[in-house]
Length: 135
Length: 407
Image (cartoon, each protein chain N blue to C red):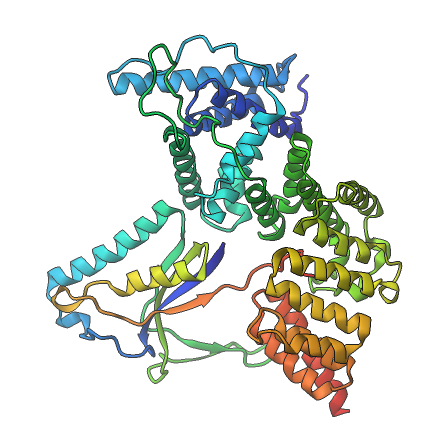
């Protein structure tokens, strides 16, 4: 029982095998891609392994504290950052091996010409509660 | 006037009620649903009309629900009812029924997380929502996990036992699905209960207390030294729970715990149970782990800990399990018994990629006076920690040494 974050990047991940921007796909290829993602989430719900999935807008803002009594400073959109998160899925699985298997499936989502994108996904374990018995 | 519901009593009746339904021939998954419905009904009705015989009431209501559902099911499928109207009298429910329920819910064909969820629901009587909250997953996800687990368990009952002749003989009653006809392995049940005790989140449901309750119930149903060993282990660790965390939630290591905050009643109970189990001379890993916990619990101060005996118990554990994590803990104990150099020598024989290897090395180097190495290893250990409280603790250790050295 361990939770993992599957991170999908707009930018910052190593280049995918089938790396064609989505706006150059055929409309039905986009539909097939979206369907694959939905089916994947639905399947995880059925196996009792789904926790959460969200997509993020590609544009955001940097914000930081600017001292007592002053409004926070904002900057952005962060056009020049190397790493840009597109969205995530959180899964709750029995093992690391299972998490890798699922990430592999998600990375096989079809892209241009209906071929798998082979997109790199980042797999990050959640920190847990400490176990009671350690010694 | 309405009487408050005794929820603990209600939940303690759950396994035997479910076991009776299954023994009467009910399919496991359907029976489990029916028992949950009966519990909900009890919570609704009992405050105004408390029953004379709580268990009898639950059995009657659950059986009725089960019949209603199977009739509806049968009608849908346009075939005859699978169950008799009148329940067969059958033998009185026994501890064996409860035991078989534990075995089913911990069946090796279930994944650990499914076995845990099913045990908490079918044996523990928790609702799906409570279990979902305890493991921080959506209720729908937990509902699916449980319902798949129930189907798996029902199918186990449906498949013929190995070596059984095909078909059934004339005059023989149809084989009910989900029947208790396969012997279980106590070890699988203990692993599930250990997981419930040791893993989970601190939400509304106290999983550690729940694990202890379920292990007590198991110990009452079966006379087995390892069940007693696990119960003792849980009690001895539970006794120290309040002392393990500071008010801000940070971890307090064993040596620094305020021992006056340990629960002496739980410690006495745990030690009593352990001694009775050890006297039977059928040592197992849970008894050995409990013995180590008992030696810690027995020491009035950290300095008075009997590390020599603890090392001996780790040797026993290594012999029983040959688990590398045990060897790692043993190396730390050797460091306490024979000095940090001896501990480091024992550690040097182990794979550095073991969990907590860097943390153990950091501790032993600090005790050996090599503070810069210790600080570096604490930082490394923090980086590798798999839980937040431990990471923060290790980071603080590194920071403490680095601050001391810079002054």
